[in-house]
Image 1 (cartoon, rainbow, N blue to C red):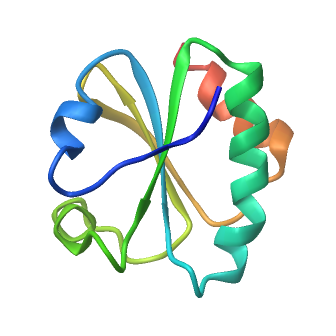
Image 2 (tube, rainbow, N blue to C red):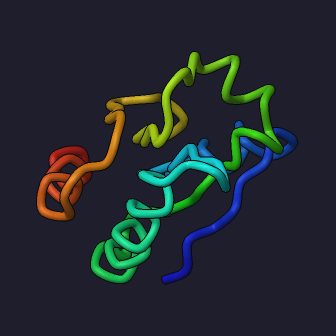
Length: 103
């Protein structure tokens, strides 16, 4: 399953149904580039979860509204509500269990 790209324009609608993991990132962020392949791998392993990324440089409105001050930040939604968040680069097993405890 591919990782989707979310924007300010559709963010609320994109996160409104089911379990959704959103990776807040930026092109210049080294740890963001390191977490991206982990998120990509997990998207193939957890088909019931929607995986997405949002570039904070191009979509500042949502990032500001949600208080994203450090990246990478991963927000986990369940039916439109933020249920958990993790900040910084995490190893794959830790990230997988972070997601699975809410599915």
